Image 1: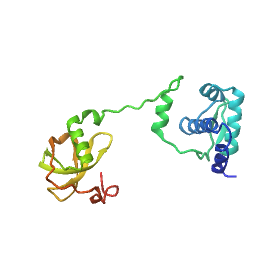
Image 2 (image 1 turned 180 degrees about the vertical axis):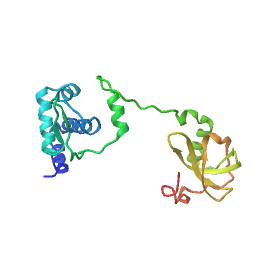
Image 3 (image 1 turned 90 degrees about the horizontal axis):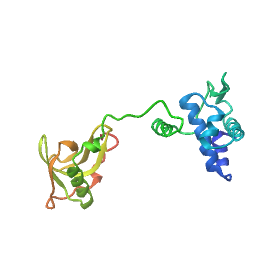
Image 4 (image 1 turned 120 degrees about the vertical axis):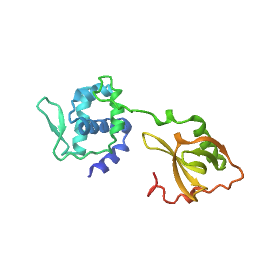
Length: 203
């Protein structure tokens, strides 16, 4: 039976959520830190070392070629290690930072684009999208009339993407550059279906 089928079988068992949680944790620790001790499983989940050993046994049955025993009696990844669960580096580090034993890495953001955006402009964009009334605003390139479809957060800045009535096409504008927003009820709303290229060519 392949590992995925075995995981499905475990998911059908009583107490499966707790078992799967521990198996995922084992898989993550081996994948990200390259080392794991039974005592760490015991402390993390408040279970006995015997139960931790059982969890390791279940894991090795699912993935017999994933673990090797290191000299200090910890476990490490075998050369052919293949993770049983999907991996997300950010989620792992954020969860590990909350571990009582601590974690040597933190995630640091140099800035939060939402904090720097003008609240009034963001509110006007939201109101325009909800009421389906185009939004007039000033930008570095002059006055624009926009039907906003989505706010784009690229991690360092915020943008609004929508139909630009002046240019007759979908455009992207930096929210921080927009000033004096106001609704324009007399201008027709262009539906988001016009944004056919988002995802392919969109920001």
